[in-house]
Length: 299
Image (cartoon, rainbow, N blue to C red; front, side, top):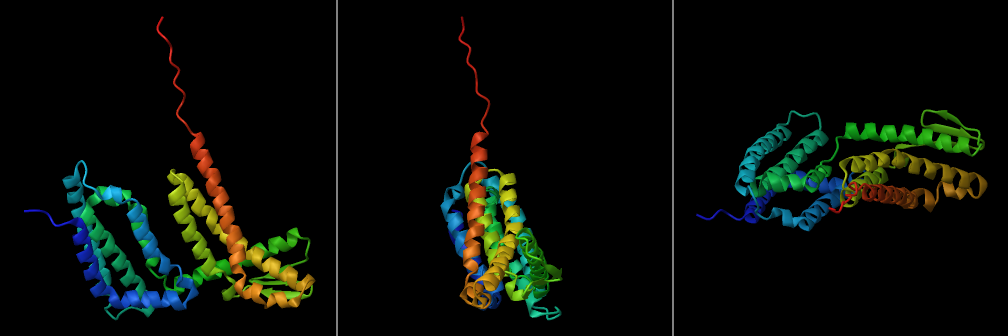
């Protein structure tokens, strides 16, 4: 008896998951469309599918295919169990809020997708496609409390970074929490100015760039870690630039289009730095070669 096609098996399991998780999935996409904090969710699934398609050669049967499938079944069983447990827990009605329920439910959905892939293609293929598969966890919306904590950290570090820029420019500045006072102007780094949206976009983009351009896992990790302080630095630069333009050029800069819609300019600057760092790390990898072999002719 011929074994069912792994593509059909994956399609059936994913279709079944949509029946179970349809409402949480719609809610997640609704949050992503209407809330800037979750906007990156919209691109995660297409990017993951595209990455898997680019590496589709790894899905072909090879040596030890059956053994890979057996290991995949064991791991898939564990993940299926965890996915169902999270789905049931999210619908129990005993959770503190809708956001916690949605986080648990979407985590269960991603685990179901991972288990489906493991069951269809086995452990070896899944291991080779670990990044695009785990990249799907970015579809899980953070709880409001965790998101607020991240935004608070961004506010505080952005304020401190802006203070450093003012000090470097020899501008007298006093910082009290997230409020900065300079001659003629008081600046509050509000939640809306935390740059949570662009910071998450920068982090996701950096992870993708590191995966596509770097071979060393350590270099990939370094590049992603660089994106974290860089996301704060580009926001601090934005606040500093707006303040200086508002004081020395026109007060309209403090409330104008550059304030509300100019974040992409500083995002582009940060992304350019990431590209340069990726290029540098890539060149470092190409310089690491095996020692030259010296051939000695027999006399």
